[in-house]
Length: 448
Image 1: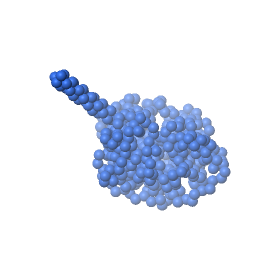
Image 2: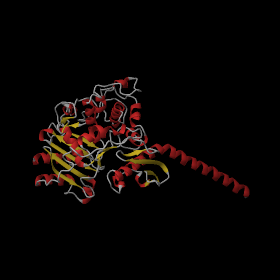
Image 3: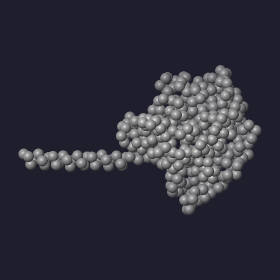
Image 4: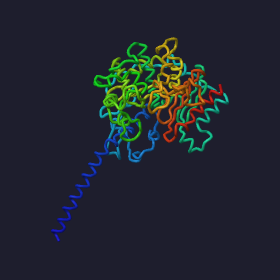
């Protein structure tokens, strides 16, 4: 009996070792995916708390299988937010740095002293809250979903709308818990602002759209990629913009310290300049070129764009290498987002000075019709008029162009009507066609 008991014990021991090995092996196999989830959670919790001043960052986590297992806490020294799976696995930290927001990394990054940015020269920062007329109020009410059930209105997720007409603030509205002073993340609207940043440096003679040989490691056909290719998403570099665990976009944002280097390391999937594929990696490579040429690092947006325009709320978060994440991480109040739109509408003229090359926005909002996967993407901006003359949105004027970002962020510019419209929110479960933003702009045009 003792012999049999000993044999059973040995078998159980072997089984236990095998089970443990399988669990450990399974964890290390899935760890890259888990790190994507914990990186998102850590950065989100840090930024929502420090930049937006809100206390429930979990309300900005889109539904995904990891959410029930994510745990976030402030570290014992209060310097970072750490997220993990069940408090034990795949730990990631996001560090808050004054002037720069939150940065993922094992250690707190060392960044340059941020250039001071005041609101002087920004006419919208201190403008009195407007009293819109009935038609405008009705347009905003529809865009906020006042006609919907409470559940459907919550899914629509509109948090802020700001309207500028002929250079004046004419309407604004905010959801409960949000104000004119609440910073909100624009996600890929940052790509359109990147175009303005490139234009700012083009006016200064630091960069040109035709510049090639942009990265020293590009010694093959990638050396032909120009700044224009990066802005228009025709670099040809391999990419997958799907927001899912383990894709190139989520790997870059939540697992790579030097995001531009990661994106630049990928091989060509298409000939340079001949195929358009939406790529956050291309925008981050563009910003790495700008920071390298100016030597300004993470401070570049503050120095070159925020200070001249008086965007005192704007924060463009960098990666672990100190490069602004120009594809995704620009925070600003709705009014400052509207000021960005007005700056574009005025083709870079601000307080009597031209900050962009003449005609920059006309070129940036011109669609070239390159073969690919996008409809209406131009030079960092989405445009209504396609190269063949057809319209993306028949209800909007042909000269309309816009910035758009993940989860329902929109910034519309209608030069012919002198109209700028900002819609910010959290709408991960709403299709673009159901955001009510096109209807909002249409109704505001009718109300003018």
